[in-house]
Image 1 (tube, rainbow, N blue to C red):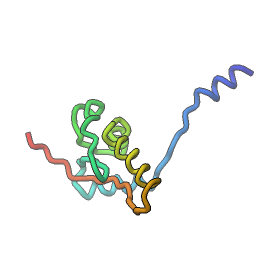
Image 2 (cartoon, rainbow, N blue to C red):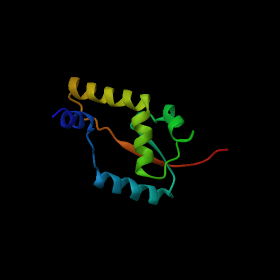
Image 3 (cartoon, helix red, strand yellow):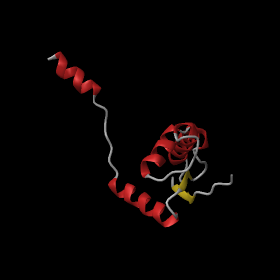
Image 4 (cartoon, rainbow, N blue to C red):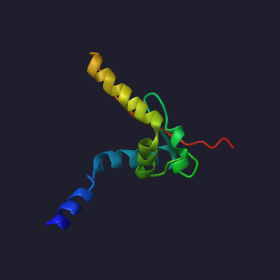
Length: 104
């Protein structure tokens, strides 16, 4: 049936990371409820437009949204994949959370 096929085509994969979500929530609480995310090399400062003009995050969803929307973070991930394929170095890609501080 064509309707069944079109429904299958419309389904996007869904992901669930309950352990990571809890680690992020725990880190957010430990840092005082507001954090700024970054990867090893760069932060998603080019994606603040999608997060009300700020890098301040209070939930795992805020962090995922910034990382997913950032070309800087995409570049880091692509470089990480290249390093893993070309070199024998054991480099880890890490999510770093820092305490939010408003300088204004």
